[in-house]
Length: 509
Image (cartoon, rainbow, N blue to C red):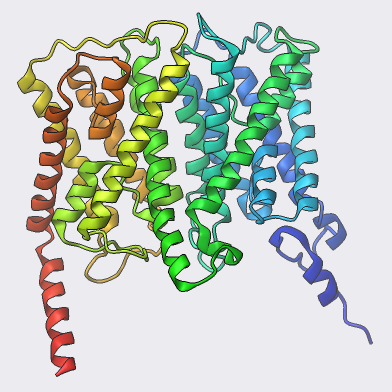
């Protein structure tokens, strides 16, 4: 007598790691195969509708609009991740296929579901008369080249963060999956939309761009705008797939030919991760400082904190996610190795120097991009009325607590080993300190909080030209003080290290 229920062969063919339906389920197994695509459809519909409703809500502060969109993405991604992976973006699906993390046929079907969801959202908005005066493209004296540059950069960030948080076998192992994919992806929207205020509106999602094409048939925007955004987002997907292969070469066995080459490639991956993370953080921070917000520190605080959260979650298991020479100095001064399974010792002076060089190079690259964004008009300047002493106190205050939180929450492991291997709150802890510090001292010192941010600010001529050396002294000194405070408050870790060293020495006798 044949057993009831689906055969083992059907189970093996079931797509997207979807859980097998119970025998008494009201849905058949064949119907269940379609549920991932339905989830992508409605998830993309909700995200696109949220964007269209918010992008031209003139009565709502711009910062609140970006927060609304970001947290909707957090919720939808978290709700659908276990069914589909929750890419909710054709660019992300394309990046997954290019990175070898999803079959091309599956990615194509997901893209169809996402596009249909975006078109449905646009149709509903048109019929409801929502956002009749939707405007996209360049603002003020900016041009379409600058729009394309920023849209491509931030679409790349979106795809890269998703790949590192959801597709990486190390950062999201099948047997112990992380819980921060939704937060990281949602905060990418928050960062990009705050960074581009006064320049353009970014979408960072080619499904939304498709929705704009459909919206152009009945709304106030042009079809060509949607086509342009769509192409920029696809270009971002290609760049993200390449960057993913750079920072995670160990996940592509074909790239590793021998032990010597493997070591060189792995070291390059560490420095590449520091470069990419620092680039996005500094670029977003300085763009939000320059945005036309009437002196409101909110966009800078939210935008910078959001990109820090996203980059830390994406790259912390690759390089330790320093992204700041002051943090690198604090880690070096603490003498403690990272809690993560990293292929290097963070207390090594050689790596500290190379990390700092990568971070400086990233800041220079960010300055060049900002120069292109503001090439047609003079770069805005920010005026601070604080004294030198007030600026010193404000910067040291912010950097001290940032470095201390990094040391206490991520770089070292607790004595009892009680922390989850995923450490899901580490990125949120970093970002919370950046948000709070920027809101606290932003109107005093500008809240640079990073020596390489000072490099970018000085290169673009955007502020009162305080000496780079002075800012570096402030920040590095604060990092060393944070390491000293960590030593005092976490003395038990160093006692345990000494005991372990003695045990190893005695065992070797």
